[in-house]
Image (tube, rainbow over all chains, first blue to last red; front, side):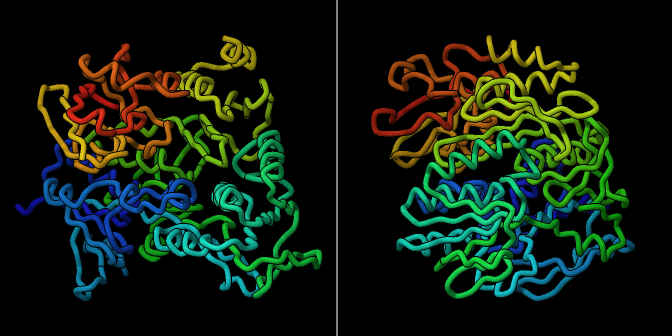
Length: 392
Length: 107
């Protein structure tokens, strides 16, 4: 009998974690990890934060070269997957050594997301911030003072804006929604961060859609032009589902998976940013773009493959964003339609039909950790309970 | 270069050479030392780089940083007065030869 084999498509933090966890769980079969970028797998979160300041790419590396030999993980960088042949349980890959087919007993999709490119005239003049290569280009651009426009007032756009401002650039943020980070945080937190960014000297254009990127700046729907020598596009992402879709897997805002993170094909799992899974608390389908989800998914899938465990995914989401000297921390996950209650300055609770969904804090690790414990316990939480935690 | 020794829960010792300015967490991860995870990359978000500083080194390593105490609450194993988040311990010549002990698990 040939060795059992697992193939992981996507060598981001989640894909690599799946390989790590498979070995930690005693999986003795073959593991192939396929990535389309050059170099060793690296962390993405610092690309919009510390890396822009220090430019230290080595510090981003998730594992040294020796890991792949000592743990027998066949890592294929700069390799694209062209097709999943579910009937044959094979994929078609194309890399430096040409095209070939690769068999799998279990396939893990960790294909992540790519940047949305909205229909804005001249959008190709703008830069992205998603890969290490993107960040290298941005860092080089940041070496001389200039006017910078950021299209998109989400986490990446705002983290970048805070760094650029600190480096002395003139920064404008253009956001089509009426408030910052609207999809992910409460309106209290949006307003709080809007005030901070304005204090730091960044111009915010909220509720204004960008319609064109020109050589001299960005034109808004209202006809005004924001002068800029450099434009960053940070208008969100879309999950990379084309391979899965072409293979006939069920797609629903990502690769649809069940509570065990299996796709509609029991030989294929999906994890991280590309996977749409049932929220353990509400059962509603959700897709999260975070290190936490990617790595917690990876650990569950690895334990299932290596040890036959069949536990449902139940990890509590957590998230952070560093903007200037502020650390926004979110325990739990709230839909955009969740209600909000300001518990105290810088502490917001989000509620939905099932009760407390999330707690947002700023520079407050104590309350963040207590909220994580409270939410993870699964016990019903009232606003008063949170008040007690804050007062304690 | 600064030498750091990691003592795993089962007693296995691994000594690595780290760069000046590196953190105890990053030195472990970049040298493939099992037992330190550092999921958030040193952003003090995850408490998966928990370690116990060897008694002989406690004074030299110094106190916990702001917020570290709170994050340690999320550690998977028992937290005692030698507990630190290893991402918050920066290595320099004064810590050459440092010994840290690793908990049984980080999750």
